[in-house]
Image 1 (cartoon, helix red, strand yellow):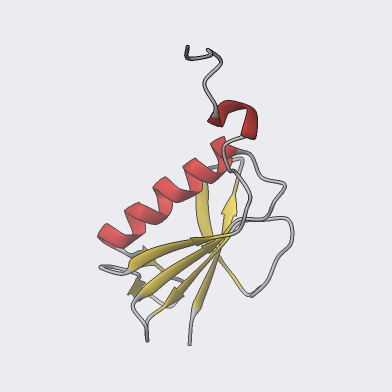
Image 2 (cartoon, helix red, strand yellow):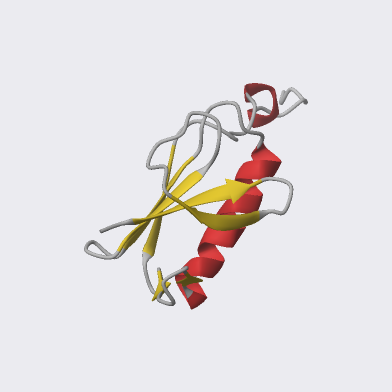
Length: 100
C-alpha cells in the first residue's frame, strides 16, 4: 500500500496524509512495490516551491521518511517528478542577447 505525503509550503517539509489526490498541493507517493517516489506538482506552484519540495524528496531517497506507524519508507527509491508546475518561465529559457 503506498504512503502519501503532502508538502507544507510554510515549513518546507512533507507530512503524512490520507489524501491520494490534490489539485492545490504537492503530493509525494512512496510506492514500495516499485521502489519509486512519485512527486506530483500542480500547475499553480512556483519554481521555488517545486525546488524546495524536490530537495526534500531527494533527501527522502537517501534516508527514508519516518511514518506514524514507526516504519521508514522511501530509502533507495527512484524519484519521478510529474506535472507542469514550477517550470522555468518561457521568457527565461532564451538568452536576452541576440547572437550575430
